[in-house]
Length: 444
Image (cartoon, rainbow, N blue to C red; front, side, top):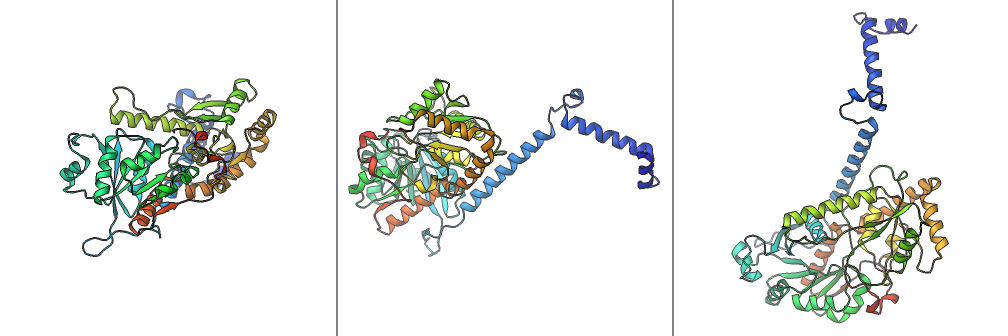
């Protein structure tokens, strides 16, 4: 019957046998694509249509993330460009001065500066090939550029180093605006020493709850809140948000302080009360013994890629803002990657995280913590969880990217050059529980 119908539909030059051969080939393709186990010998790639569709979705998600970055990198109305000798506006020349191999956040900031339409960024490392350690930073700049050359010298300051004293000499001479990023919690007098040793004109601080301690440090200086950020081209929601697996308790190394909620999450997991949860050790940015800069950078990128992939497969992330109420970087990374967060609400920018965080506290009973995790991991609430995460991603993507960090750096430089010294807060913050610095983590 079917071949008579084909004979009527097909042109005369087509034979029924040829049409049958084409149909048979189409059936083979369907079997090959959707049931590779039946035709394994003639499926040399081991790829199904489902694999191809997943790869296509991931590519679309990455393209969307790139579009998001391009949109965020457009001209900022608050930016006042410097002028050249002909009275024409030009891009702000910024030297990213790394100490040692540099850390991943500073590298991400440099990549964002390269995208910025009003910044001409360059990366240099103290002690890099061509850097004469017997000479000062200024002397090395003169040898390489013929002068200090840059409008801003920007440094991620982790601790005491020779670089800080050399930056201070340039700052005191007024040859460039010196900016530092304190990169972590400011406890134990660390940030005061960084400011004094570097003579920084502009200071970017990671945590707003730390800033009131420095109200007496703003004479001739601008202190800007630059919250922990993430790169949406790395941390993005791959595939469907609804169909993922399990929960992750994120643990970052090298942090002092008190984390009562994290300790309770770990105990519940160890006791088997959260069977769908596991602990993920993020790792650090340190350099192994004998490892060169390129090796350390490659290791960091591999670590970040594994971490992002783990987030992209998790439904829920379990966190703790510590007794200081800090908004740690894992919060922005988890939300961008499409995870719902169960944690206490950080005291910094609670407006950004109210949708992203299912709020609990150190005093929440164990049974309630277990119930919440089970509730949001259950299949019945997949769609509700996915909808809540999508709603939460918009404010986080608008405020917590490295592109916004560069914007804040530029705004701080503009304020300094205009003589508008003081503090720049990025939004709402609660200071009540962070008055005692003994409760703050010592480092990040």
